[in-house]
Length: 246
Ligand code: SAH
Image (tube, rainbow, N blue to C red; front, side, top):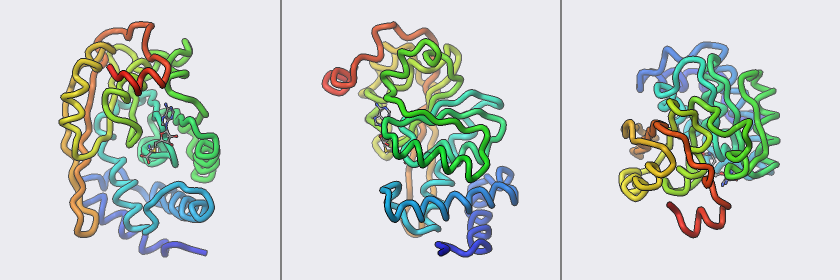
């Protein structure tokens, strides 16, 4: 069974990416990888809850285009961590669009990580690795702590909590990219102290706006630079992080 015709899919990918200035990121091979990803995700989604977005054209905009925007904040050859990847977002689209980077995608849910691993294989993405992990545990592993050039996360937690989960993984000189919704500015204001406590400093708030049919989507990126090491007392246990956010 097919969810969308391959030709129609390719033409929609080209149109949408071109509209937002990303056509240079696409090739025949990459579109094929996105097609494989779409068919596989929608088919597995019949039995495993992976995404609420079932219309392949909406998948192109709300998942693939959405995940292309942060690419400009990821330096060439970067070592990247995706915290709370779920069904592989933004990790899978970034791995397709940026063969130069190396991504580790982590999530606390084993069945989602199994799915992402199997999908990366199916799409022949040798630059994407996965691990079942709670971020607050992984960040205390000396092999992972302060070892990533870029840590990125979409739709996982509010900024104060997310900063404690993500910033400890970032190398000094690297950055943390939070893919946020409409309330980004409010969340950022609330999280100023948390960001500073964890060794971060606001680099930029990048506006991301696009259309999904008649709906206008606003998904700003909060980009935080890591300017000093995170104290070893962070991250705390999850109960404390969520009960008493920094
Ligand atoms: N980033 C994906 C998924 C968002 S849903 C997307 O944008 O589509 C949030 C995911 O974060 C869930 O899969 C959940 O298991 C994971 N998660 C939440 N807290 C976590 C933590 N402390 N460590 C690791 N994963 C976490």
